[in-house]
Length: 254
Ligand SMILES: Nc1ncnc2c1ncn2[C@@H]1O[C@H](COP(=O)(O)OP(=O)(O)OP(=O)(O)O)[C@@H](O)[C@H]1O
Image (spheres, helix red, strand yellow):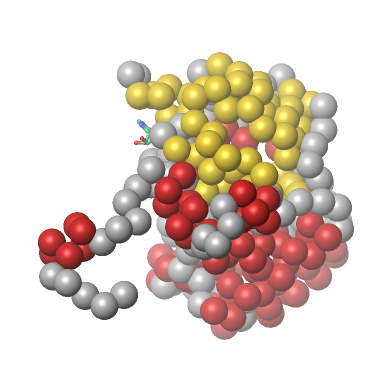
């Protein structure tokens, strides 16, 4: 169980996250939605303790993230919002680095690595430097590294970004299987279809504030006859009409 209590993050005068309070139970796929700059990555970076909150607390299975950071980190794997890291390493060197950080059986890690490499079709590229990879290949290499130790909580910042349809399909199935085992998957996305397909619960953020938390089904039931896209755009406070598009492109058929 993850409990976020009144989490606030300020950058100078800018409040990126404002008193966020949320509970995320095990056995769920939990999605963060929000426009650019809404505070999704800020929430995620606090959860994986890459940044420190200005105020507020996070506990994971009763452990306080601030005071018991190492114990919490061992429960979590993280995919950052950009895969452009450790580019001088080959994927194999990067995975070795990750594996060494976890106190797990080498045989089990190696078996899981081989399965993930086969699934994401990365065997032919594993020895090449990640600098030579396409965006999607880097994303796959980072994903394999994050999923290798298989901790209870996966925290994935826009994990489907840049993946080909096969890899996206496989990752979505891995996420569902992890949650079905009673574990936790937290991710952010801009893709509403993906959110609808995957999320047991979602949180919608707007300018650092939580404006909705609940299931997609509950949200749709509160707004009968409307698509998730229309509901989301209204809640996030943006236009759903076309007058700015028309101003650029002229009248068009929808
Ligand atoms: N290091 C930083 N310094 C100053 N402001 C920051 C910093 N990181 C984020 N912000 C600001 O905090 C706010 C929230 O940013 P965040 O990256 O969490 O948004 P996001 O919802 O993940 O957006 P996106 O969908 O574009 O990735 C934005 O206004 C952003 O400009």
